[in-house]
Length: 244
Image (cartoon, rainbow, N blue to C red; front, side, top):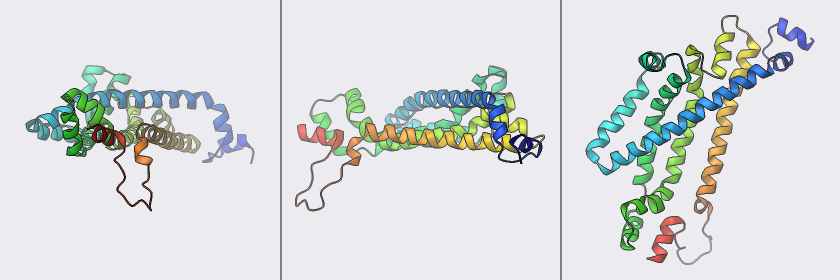
């Protein structure tokens, strides 16, 4: 069957669709990436101070975690309806909803990462005269990066998927193509947009994993099997201990 015939036959895989709708696919993908990236960055900027507040003031931990969890349970249609009077049918409506959904993942992982920092590393840093700010940025955050990046990866993949819901207001990236194809069940468009969405999630996850490996080189160091003495700690904690 010719490639032109695959459109008439409504096949799942159709090369003619990819050629004739290439610009439409590119535009939808660019919009999808833009909305996802902006939502995750803003979500991280909001989640970080919330996590610090919850950790420094235990009385706020319950309300912060409870509120972010509650926001995550709100159905997307209800969330967009609540935000509609504020943002109208705009990309800001979708981005705000996605930011609110990302908070429960990001806040919890930031708190978990900070709590996993060994107390002896903190004590060694304080003994060297580190103040709260320097302790946070030079000791705690580097050691918390694996948990923080794990949360960021989960939030990013989740946001890639949730961005498609923005199609209900015409700002869903690849979700717009899926929604447009459903009434006539245009198979090639549904499959192509779905595959591209999955590929975006995979690529984003791999990129963040690469960034994590670059920022935490000490996690790749393996102690020698035949070593007769305990290896010195590596990473920021080891540097603090060594200087101390």
